[in-house]
Length: 344
Image (cartoon, rainbow, N blue to C red; front, side, top):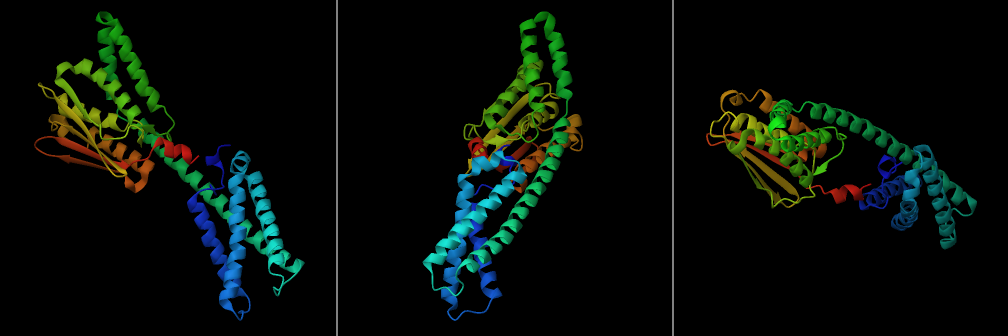
């Protein structure tokens, strides 16, 4: 079982350690307010905070050190081992605290047993909460993946028919070219069958788009010109597969192909700190392309939804039409492939 599938969070991370500290301090206030008010409130608060934080951070440290082992265990076994570790840390810290403060009002085994009892209840509640959150996340992820698969399956396939016609025409006169076109078409469909929760790097997406454009270039010839200006974008940025291809396909189908003289597609990129911007410009749509409620709008909504399922509200897609042309803008956070691997 992979680390990502375990219901236990990464206790080596700063957010997890911070959460342990906050929960521990809340427990301190509950314990302090549930009993008689001591004479020296601040001293009692300090000692109890130190005691609880030792247990909390000690347990987090043990879970961090055994992270790889716990990740390979089934959830039930991992939960039981984690529960036993927390109780063991509580036992050790309680014994040490008993020796460190021998003049405490509660001495002997009663203090240790009381500490173990509180730790057993709190650990059971927290582990149960983490498990339920994990199950909820799995259900949400499964729903999102199903939605992404449905959206990915709806990518307009008219380029398939154009490509097959082009390949059929090239078989007799240019067999080597037809063979290369079949390989390019296979690459496109291989990506379309990729698992829905997998992102690709920008470099991979551009390579895929170039395979598609080579087919369209053979079909349209000099009528199609594509200008890439993505040198300001990092190649390792992650995006959903087939993000750029449907938008460029729109530009060709509605902006370039209806024109006798053809047209130019321009793909421009910019980075603003941890946000990436991509603009796709094409000639203004003519004829059927003027109807935004048709395939052009459907493809844009498809890409918009898949971006938001991957990045949440941090991803945006905006389209603007003017007399000079049609522009689609993509905005999404810079998520690196290396960051994805570090979270596993």
